[in-house]
Length: 298
Image (cartoon, rainbow, N blue to C red; front, side, top):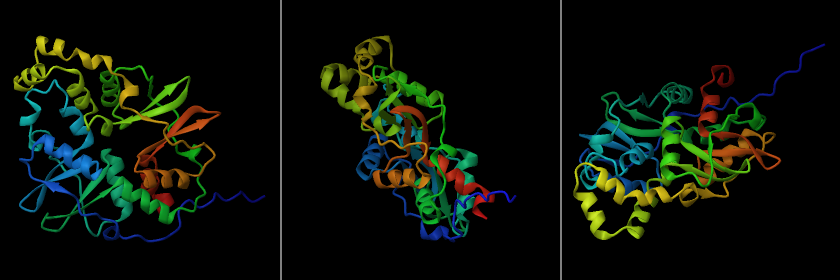
């Protein structure tokens, strides 16, 4: 009896890297953190390339920004420059690299983008997980069920969890998003982007005295007095910053469906439910890992 052949996941459609590389938005090392934040929000992007003399010298992401806008920074936020927090050890690839090579770099280094450079190390562009997910849509045969690649053990928080606890869970578990659940059902999702607009900054402006805000801004280092002044932040919870009613998929849906949702709505992860209960999550990382698999892509 012949063994049933597994359905093919990807079609053998060649996609050149240069066809999907994007020209990134760049800033100089002396750009202020606040200005970088505004650029990220204005263009709805997840990273900025730091450029000097037409060469990439660093990168700053939403995660970097979320860490640095904390009121516990060692210097006033207005005086923090991107050079102070940027990642300097860039992961790069030449323009003639393959899609699979870039997918492997992202998987190996646990990053969401690769900087593309010329032979003389000048900046050419950037390729992101979003670009690779778009490539997956071109090559996918729509035969792979989500249950095969989803993460089953999902880290969650309740709507009542403090925003400091949510941020701590994200950092300590090295994850980019967290699902907010109520009675084991997903009711929201929080990413680093939710900390950037400074919904916390907006709350700060609305609920604190202008004199107190000025005193905190002028201090180069937070102290016990400042912490007491800012204790109002402890009253805000996950429900205040989460994106409510997130898109969901089902274990039997194909990965193609999740990829379409991610691209169409500019999101990086989708909760997976069964009988309205959370059973997993599928992310762009899971799809990039498919593209990095030699057995699949050959």
